[in-house]
Image (cartoon, rainbow, N blue to C red; front, side):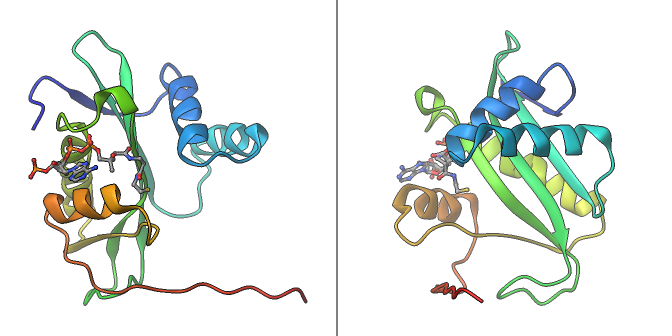
Length: 151
Ligand SMILES: CC(C)(COP(=O)(O)OP(=O)(O)OC[C@H]1O[C@@H](n2cnc3c(N)ncnc32)[C@H](O)[C@@H]1OP(=O)(O)O)[C@@H](O)C(=O)NCCC(=O)NCCS
């Protein structure tokens, strides 16, 4: 655990760092990220969501976690589940406890919103994320294959 990290909700001052790290995690079109960041900061989201940023003691943003509340999540028993939509720590700062600190803050956010469970997912080949989730205390509940077809 990294006791010297600070975890805070994203705001206008950390939005650019969130967008940059988001682009690294999900390398889509830059505009998609801009729109998503603007949408979140406008406070006009339709469901409960949160974005937490991890900062070093000298205020450098080094990771983020995106959260929502889902009415259903695979393997869960409750109907209000805190969900990790995205989790990222800068490469040079990995394996120093930042991921665990973000997940701990996410758990607190979930509890504060009345959730009894927290859930997450990752790609089947993302071995380091799977190992980290297990170290964070998650149980693996299912492996899925996704399909698509043009209509
Ligand atoms: C997954 C990720 C967020 C973990 O962040 P992190 O800051 O390195 O995690 P921590 O340092 O808090 O590690 C927590 C635990 O996971 C373990 N862990 C982390 N990375 C690991 C790896 N590559 N292999 C094995 N175990 C790993 C740590 O050893 C630690 O276990 P411990 O508590 O028993 O010591 C980070 O690797 C990352 O950003 N990866 C790229 C993005 C990604 O895959 N995100 C998840 C899917 S959205």
